[in-house]
Amino acid sequence: MRDLLQIKAIKRISLLIGIAFLCFSCKYDVLYDQYQIIENTVWNKDKEYYFTFMVDDIDVPYDITLEIRNNNQYPYQNLWLFCGEERPVGALRRDTVECMLADDYGKWYGQGISLFQLSTPLRKNYYFSHKGQHTFSFRQGMRNDNLKGIQELGLKVSKSVNSPVSTNPAEGK
Image 1 (cartoon, rainbow, N blue to C red):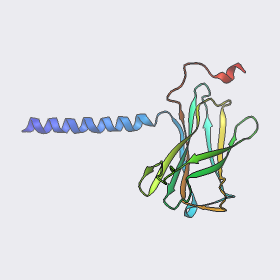
Image 2: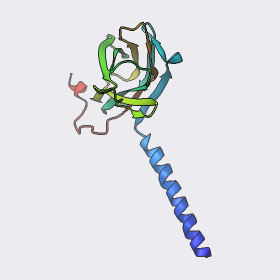
Image 3: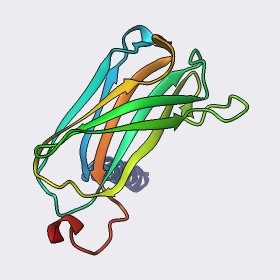
Image 4: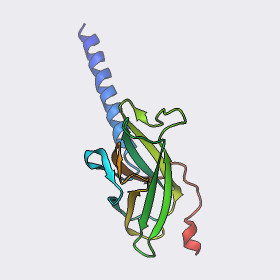
């Protein structure tokens, strides 16, 4: 009986160590992962959200993902965003991004039940051209002055999982 208890204890400890290893190893290549709460789930058209992080390694590609958390009160299928990228050197880059949050029948693409989280890739295998502080900013581009239903906005920057073996293409320029 004592041997059986020891075997069960060893199995439990091994399982806990395995789970801890998986949890910590998944975060290793994440450079930045932050969310900002949209107050009262109403996003005013003039409110801009900023995400600032440091890049020290420009020799590897990164995946940049926009994280959107919306609830059932969001009235549209898509979300238009004005995106800005401020780099340590060079002009401010601006872009317009459309995020599809639901299909034609109103089924949310994101994971969840009453709060849905959707990851939208902004850039894949992206090489930062300069080391230093980078800032991404987002402002809603919908027709509503006060857009309801978006609860949080996040940005995740991680080393690219499918990175090519080649060197940084910016080095040759």
